[in-house]
Image (tube, rainbow, N blue to C red; front, side, top):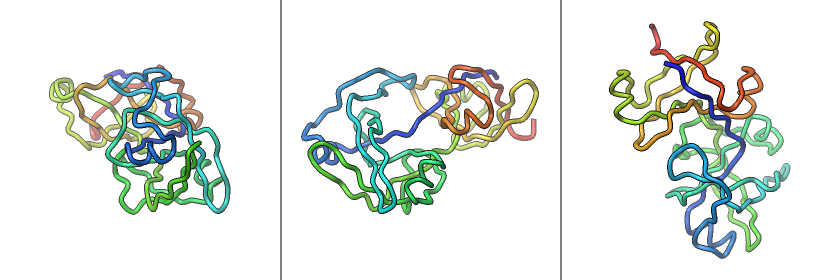
Length: 187
């Protein structure tokens, strides 16, 4: 099956409580919608701070979540002096700490920094049709050459897309919107 690539840059997901502490507001304002239904890049940005360094103006992605999460690349992590795990979104237990700085204050997170695991967004109906299971590992190919594996993320509604980060897009010479083929492992 051919699906488009979605290239992700560093970004932050926030709880309502953290949003209030950082910005003094209870809702994010939309800058632009992104492909996944209901998700958007907000007008808000934060600075990421560690004892080693600061990365400024990191976009907050909405909507509000039930957890605070910071998604960075390997190069970002190195710059910040962190060694975050590669994980699925939302799997932040025991991940790297960070300080978030907004215009109204700072929030110290004891955990929350991850490198996002490559993943394929599929809706339930298409996943059943293709016989893909949630968290199943699939293989991505371009021009008949195996590139990498990714995990399946089944959620309704979903925009069918394989998410990788900006560094992976450079490594594999893939652009946002470019199509790759995905296959079940062993097929």
